[in-house]
Amino acid sequence: MKTTDFDYALPPELIAQHPPEHRTGSRLLHLDGKGGDFVDRHFTDLPDLLRAGDLLVFNDTKVIKARLHGLKSTGGSVEVLVERVLPEHGGRAHRALAHVRASKSPKAGARLLFAHGVAAMVEGRRDDLFLLNFEGGKNVFELLAQIGEVPLPPYITHPPADDDESRYQTVYAKNAGSVAAPTAGLHFDHEILALLESRGVRLAFVTLHVGAGTFRPVRDDDVSKHVMHQEWYAVPEQTVAAVTRAKAQHSRVISVGTTSMRTLESAAQGGCLLAGSAETALFITPGYEFRVADCLITNFHLPKSTLMMLVSAFAGHENTMRAYAHAVTQRYRFFSYGDAMFIERGQAGAA
Image 1 (cartoon, rainbow, N blue to C red):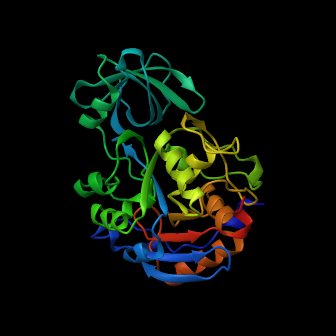
Image 2 (image 1 turned 90 degrees about the vertical axis):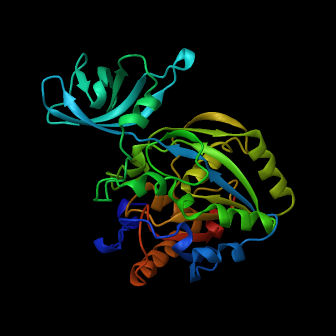
C-alpha cells in the first residue's frame, strides 16, 4: 500500500492542545471492525462495553522529563531530547542517546551546558542520535527530574505547564523511560479502574518505552520501505499467565494503546506469547495477522503515520478511514490529549 492511502484532512483546530478537565471526560468512538459499524459514545461508557473475564493490558511505562535547553561551550543554544538512558554497571546510568538540535551539530568532544551546572560531553553518534556522557557521574534520570522539561509532542504548541507534568502521564505509570506517553492510557483514572475490577474485568501490564520515533513520518510513499525505530519492551510472566487464562476461558484480550499492542505482538512472534524483554522494530501494516489482542483502545493518530497503519491493520483499512472521516465531521478531538476509540478486531486482522 501507499503512504497516501492513510492520509486524511484534519482541521488544525481539532488537534487537542490540553487534556479534558477529567481524565474520563473524553468521547469514545466504538468501531466494530467486523461489520464496519461505529457508534458515538463517551469514555465513561467503556465499562458497559466490557465483560467479566475480559483482560485489559496496559503499558506501565513512565514519561521522563526528557527535554533540556542549554548552550554549547562555544555559546550557541542547544535543545536536547533524551531518547534513551543507557544502563551502566553499578546502576549509575550517566550516558544517554539523544536528539540534539542546534544551529550547527556538535562534534565529538563538545560540551553541552545546562542549568544548575549540569554538563554533558558528546562522545559521538549512533545513526541520527548523539551519545552524551553526563559529567559528575550522577544518574541521568535524577538529572532529568531536576532540570528537564516534559517532552510534549510537536503538535502541542504551548510550553509545558504544571498540569502537563501530571496529565501527560498515566495514573499507573511505573517504569521510567519513555519520551512520549502511551496516550490511550491517559483516559483512565483510579475510579474507573476500580469499577472495572469490581465488574470482573482483569488488568495486566507490559512495559514499552516509547521513543521520539513514534512521531517520525513515513517519508517513502511505498509503505514497505519504511524502517521502524527500535524500542525496548518487557512482558512479565504474570501477564503471559493472564493472557493464557483469558484465551482458555474464551474471554477477550484488550490492548490499551498501540504500544501495548506492539509489545504483545512482538513477544508473540514465535507463535505464542513469551515473557521476557527485548528490542522491537515491529511494523504492523494491513495484512498482518494478530496473535493476541481481540480489541484495541486507542486515540486518533496522525495522518500517514505508522500508528494509522496499525489501526488499519486491526480494524480494516476502509473501516478505519470511514471512522476517521466521521470523527472529523463530528468534531472529535485528535492526538495525545484527544478522544479515544474502542475497536473490535476486523476479520482481516484475525490470526
